[in-house]
Image 1 (cartoon, rainbow, N blue to C red):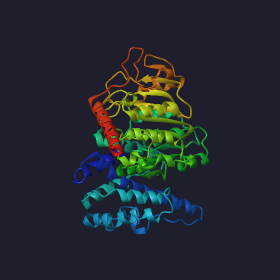
Image 2: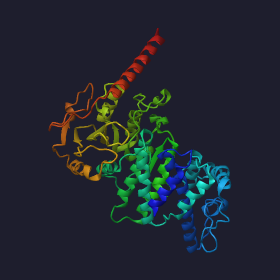
Image 3: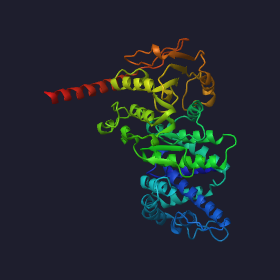
Image 4: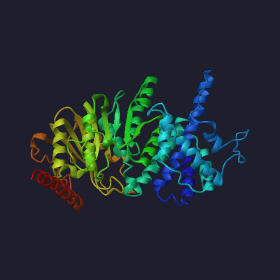
Length: 484
């Protein structure tokens, strides 16, 4: 039933001129799903309060509740078509009254970690793109049929929602930045092995895939108590996201996975000055796939000791800083990070090797990330002690990966198993850190068992490096001119 409803919703959205991509379909489905979820949550809490003989204070005023404007019911519980808004009346109510009211929660909420604040943030960032009130009525009727009060229903809906996010990832470069293949995330979580009581952070949260998978991993811990579940709900998972659409999707994705008020902030992580990070700001676990290929402004670069326009390099510095001593990280990065010869890349590799134990590098094959068109590696490290040995694993699924043939959990099973022992195999080997060139800190190495070298320089990377070197030269010349 859920799957067919999602298909029907997409069919209606395709009629809308303002909805042209999978990103639009997911965004518009998300805000409606969120309000339907919120209605169910309020009803559950009101019922619990009634059983306990206590009053319940609704978050939304009566006129803005789902049951009032979206899906009013008659005395028998059937849809009341006489009271249900439609056409221009529905569209105007949503645009002129509902969205402004919901956005107002940002200023009315008691704090940023409340569900009220999340409501305000979500409806301040997205817009209703469904211009036809009749199309909107059709979609609402499909959404209203969905039930996600039970864990089983939430589980099914979360899988369907993940499928929509995956479709966004397959839609092209813009969508791909929101989606990291879930088999890769699950393997990273199993390597890092988060434990109850540890706080997990992703400063480039995207669709919150890392946090959702880490939640599922910890929720499967035997013997969880009520206190453990409360801690998982409220004080374990933290994220930040710059882009509005990704922020909304992350919130909805975590809610569907069972976290009612996600600790996700809508902010540009890189505008935070690393010099201001205090011990209380740090986390035990970092899991992330920061955007790569982006360029940051000079004023943002001032927040980092190693200044570079490359977004991923700034994020890696941020993640190292945000880890507690003994904290563990798993971070996806473009594979050319291992060998780029520009000053920033060399300095960052030096920082990583000297301040962290970079114990594992997973080399991912082409096609791992749909639509991204780049090769990546995953860096696994522990903060607080220098690197002594690096265990490399060259992932080879034995087939070409693509949209119709994606990465799966079985492809990564050997990596996860061997990584626990750092065992050598035809696909894995260990390098002594003492053998790494202390002038370049180059981490690219050839598989001694006959495989290819880990890292390939493609023309775009070389051009990017030339541009970076030119920019560095220009900065030097500017300084020299200032001294003359």
